[in-house]
Image (cartoon, rainbow, N blue to C red):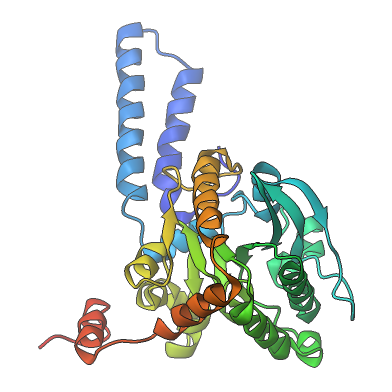
Length: 334
């Protein structure tokens, strides 16, 4: 039985438990026993397809936050070779919520940077649950500049609920650190590729995500605010988070439709649970294709393309906005 079960997964888990109990205590009638085993297996398969192929935005968020979901260090060890970590922001300290350094990817030498949440309690505390302080963003900025100096492509992995919102972070210039990252990335004259592998929370995620190419895992999300935060503001109650998630259009399919991302990395039925092998081949192919394309561009073209990409975000017509708002039930039809 899995260690963590989302609420919508309970019917599947109950059937699986019943199947396991039946296998441990077989019936005296072999023929009827075999039929019942087969019936349960087929019912479980049908239920999985019905549930996981019709996930709501809120259910996808639950999968994005799944504690067994692969994290940055898992992808780093599977896809990259000869990683040399570069620590510290040369000003205050080394924030372990962001890890980065030099690595090989196929025939490319790259600067790879990512959010790390940690899995066990001790690791979660060390990595501050993937929520960077200003020193984390300043470390990333240092690595961006280093990549530009040595003409290295930047590959970033995004997985954060958002920047750490504590008083100490504000005192140390959290907003300025994030803004500086956006400025540096916008003008960087090397290829930048960003992959959202789980949570993409607000400016804390965007500080690693201003890129020439942006990809998302199928069950990841990208949002200006968490659904709970949005629900608390609009309804005064975080229990409305599922409604907020639907209205925020934060899932990969919606963002791809709006042309805010360049591709979706398909996940196995039920989402990713503790390993990256099921998506490693896809990721390798996508990264290789993007790096091969972008490394043929000169620096000015890379920065200009990134700028134009940003400028197109938020452009809309009133007719399209009205149609979208009706679809999200923000405006009632006549």
